[in-house]
Picture (cartoon, helix red, strand yellow):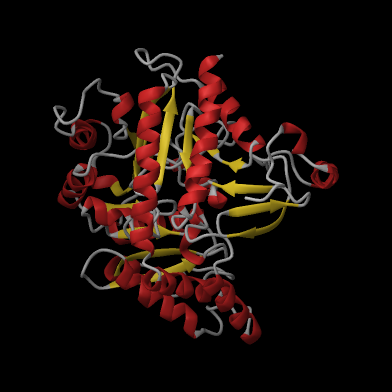
Amino acid sequence: MNNKTANSASHQPGPGSRELQKMREKNVPAGISSVMPVYVKETRGSLVIDVDNNEYLDFAGGIGVVNFGHNHPAVIEAIKKQADQYLHTCFMVAAYEPYVRLAGRLNEFTPGAFPKKTAFFNSGAEAVENSIKLARRYTKKTAVIALEAAFHGRTLMAMSLTSKVRPYKYGFGPFAPEIYKIPAAYCYRCRFGLTYPDCELHCARYLEQFLAVECSPDNVAALIAEPVQGEGGFIVPPQDYFKVLHEICRRHGIVLIMDEIQTGFYRTGGPLASFYYEVEPEMITMAKSLAGGVPISALTGKAEVMDAAGPGEIGGTYGGNPLGCAAGLAVLDAAEKEQIGKKAEETGAAASNRLQEMKEKYSLIGDWRGLGAMQAIELVKDESTRQPAPEATKAIVKRCHERGLIIITAGIFSNVIRLLMPVNTPPDQLNRGLDILEEAISEEEKL
């Protein structure tokens, strides 16, 4: 990092960012917020440079969008080449090769040897919306079950599936009907007061009771879940959790949808988190790092489920934009060529070791958890009561920002600090970022 790395509050925001902020306040709605008070000029790899030439380590990755780093050369080259050919024809009017090639690659990329098909949309929320549409058409049932602490997006159906009230749902009702919630596998705060593994995965087996007393399986089309809950606080279920859920779903003719929007593309070590849990869901939603920063999302599923809708019943004007498809193909090629999976495992292991050490040193850290390069710590006021510490969390994050580390929070109590650095972050940059985080935690602990 250069000598212009932000290392004090006086650097943030600089004059350039302050001027842009004035323009923003006049022209941009208040509901669209930003974590950092600065404006970006340039990015590369794991680094972000603002308009005042302050340099930051990026451990947020555009909220998990640049798993392979900012401005990956292969992705940039693919975008430029595609831009020279055509930007848009609408696949539903005049089709093009990158769409069908990327669909084929994702059909191979996802778990399950059965025939699969893929459709493309613009955002993760759109992929979620369409997964529910297809599940309902395929099963001829209407109800949908989601997990507490889930986040699936901000559109009507996706927001209805999401759990956290503020800031995602408050005052935006009424919500979509026929949405039900069951407890997540949040072992640190078990809703049943049990402890794994003695609990024998009661939270997963509870689905049977729920179907018996709350909502008949004859009316349930789908169960949707994130393999690791992102906005909910990087909640990592036990490895057999989804096997139990899927077995119950299959028995009752319920489609299992895995929302891999944040967990996909080597974030958790393997290609998708579904491989870690050894499940082959009927449908998988993907977005974020699929195209290295270009907006595109995908829904991949069993061919018979994906074909449940007739011609024209799913799609969208911009769905599967050529730039996104070309970038997605480049991402998949780069993953193979650069052994991204191995790098993700190494980065995840290094971050995990440091966070585990921090947990042992600081009473503020009530829990440390993660899968691959998707790591987090949960902060508490008291280790015994596990009372959340959102104020301390906010203060620590602010210190990190002032010292040149972009980091963000999560959790239903806003007391989780999550790491979403590029999975190929160089070791020296990874260690420097973790040093900044530990310094901030240590200072807060002394207060």
